[in-house]
Length: 349
Image 1 (cartoon, rainbow, N blue to C red):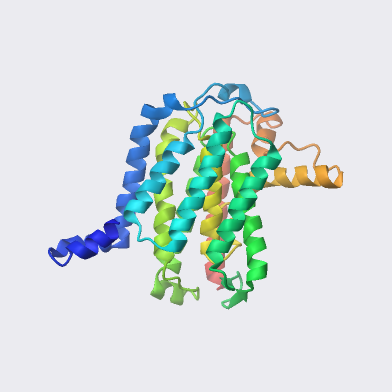
Image 2: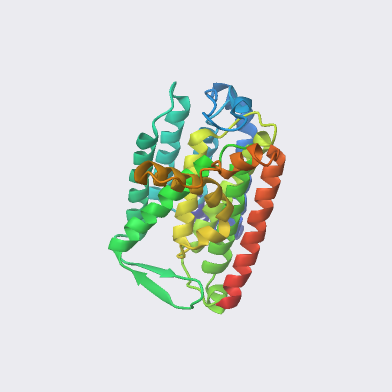
């Protein structure tokens, strides 16, 4: 909306052209997301439901009774600000709508007296993932690029949709499973969105830089990078109050929407393996537990029975790590992985 307003006003006063700059709009969007989240969360958190605690989770009693579902506030702020600052397209509006759906399903679970069952939540996640995969495909074969080669490949639609669906479902649930230590899920997703935003905006969205690095150029890369950076603003505003010891929690309303957007940005990067670069710790921490449960439940095979999942519960219970140690060490691991693999990937290409 502001982008088009800038185009209209620029003919009357030249400096209004700044409102058509992706960099200016990105900065305004990030700042607005942070300030509104920072200001509104403490004013609205008394309206949020209270955390019920998680069965079998380490130190779950410490979270019980805290306001939860804060994601309904900062995700709604994010959606409003993106509608205000981003150049619209059918694809972007569709993804924002599905993000609202992911947030809403989590919010309804947060406020429910009894937690929704795993299969019900998993089915909703699957529907959202399929819809997003179809939307992002444009109903045609999709071009992707892979590590260790400068070539792009055309993935047929019939293969892209199920693989993209699996990726989105995994990021939704891995992010949700990692939301058990103050600041952990927010910090790891903030790192992931910052990395993906930089990749989409400064590299894939820039014709000269992408050409120099032998990477594909996406004309809409800058817009998706703006979205990723804006979500970082919301997460930082939330982390101000979620830092250990936290006074509120994002709940499923936040973690499911963040996981959904994480998968979307990875798909828009054109390289599904980017999830291992920008979010390896998040996926291992939350995703390995999903794999363990699936193998034990459906194949009746004992698997990693001496390891607690999510892994943050294992290191707290078995290794005696404090919440702060979990957060700092997991975050440091992710920074090292991201920097090392990004440099290696670019150097190889």
